[in-house]
Length: 324
Image (cartoon, rainbow, N blue to C red; front, top):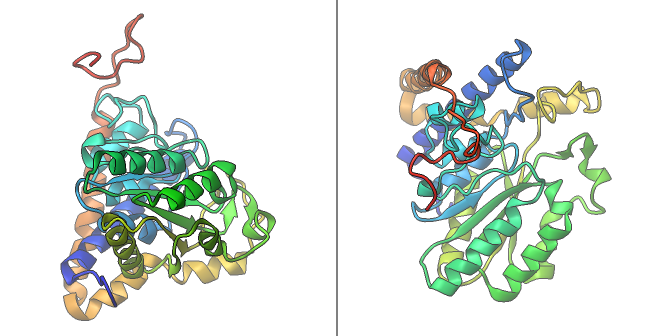
């Protein structure tokens, strides 16, 4: 496979997926116990998309994600403690506790943030790609978005502009088959969203969104193409939303058999199976146990961190150094 990840990269991606899953499970438990500030949009079963794609990016590249973006945050190298601190409104969070779980960002890592507005990360990344091209930087922008966002007008406008101007941007469509409670068949006249790439003069490719190595390889090829000045690529990563739209979702609209089939193709289990011969059961178990223990410690530390200090005239100025 072209751009196949190394064994070390595959092991690291496995650790990052286990880390993400541990965060999601704990957040779900805390929501049920009334300990979160509102519902959480979990990404269980979709970890391979966010982790595989972001691990293919260079350190100086940029990425935007969605309201369901914890796997992108973790994959991009953000610290679990500070992600969790942001989710729980602590001053040590990446946005000073003001953003919450949908709006985590870290400019130092090129993580331009999630977004509560469906599709809003698409024009943001496209605009960043325009900036990269104008400035002549050797960088690439990536936007991770869902099948619901793929139906928005701004998605089509951004992809058209990117194709017309050959912007260095990767459009990663994380197709989890549902936009809120609506299946893809109720959102789009075609089941093959990747076909839209042709209309914008860019290549399109479909990848198994539960295979982290396949996502990495497809993303690496698209990133390399963009960096060489050959323009954008649309990647449709097909996966499935095994949890509800959010932790407050009552469910009842997904076929239980369909959910069971996708749960049987869990990306973490698939990754472990692919690594077992090379790493052995003991090392795999240690990697997973260490990742879960690190998440437990991150929650413990983050929940003990202080809340932001607000003043009457500076309630929205979280940066200690003041305005710049």
